[in-house]
Image (cartoon, rainbow, N blue to C red):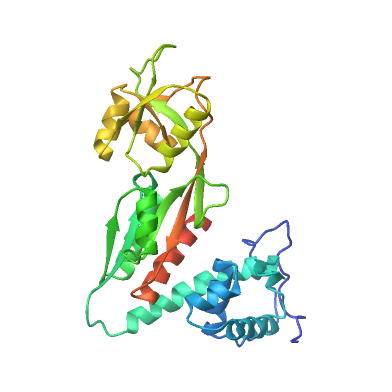
Length: 312
């Protein structure tokens, strides 16, 4: 393997994957790598899927081809990037560092490709986002993407997490940011936050009568969690269905009932509700689901920006 004498020190485990090894460079010649984009994209797909078989399927390639690309990449870097455990591929500390840099490399290459590619027709990306995931950072990321690629239209779909996940699976939309309450979510976690029970300042509920709840109709992951927990505790309840986000906010503010919401939503339409009878509020993961891309270079660029948004 190549000599590493002139390479900067790798980040220690304590420093983490975000450490910058370039800070350790003083003087001396830089090592020249011979890394292909195929190696980088093979690494990223395996890292994202955690499995060579799934990665090969996504790239329309074979397991042996991807394994060979990773072997060449590890030889070129003189580093082990994955621990191979049965069918799972777990990143080493060096793999974590390379994953962060590889996302940046692919994003820049995609932007160069899109800039110089002939613009024959307008392109579109379809993305689903549940209402309480519309954070300022998401909007800012998509705005920056729009400025970088003015000929690409971003089409938004807003529905329940269950319906958006099905749309991705059925190929109706290319990606979605949804909520998942499972300890091990199905998608890639962008961020996580603690939900809270909230209601309007006028909300009052005594010990008698069913607990008034405000939720979106099924399928709604927050609703299903709340009802399952209340039934397990044998607490009576009644549910007011909100068919739109506007009705949901107004119902909470009016004191008609309580619901599980994020802290951002609570600031808009209610206050924290402290009631020892209520089940504990869960942690809600905002996860990224991806499907078939009609314009892979464009879609992968947006996915990279969403990942980097949270990493930054």
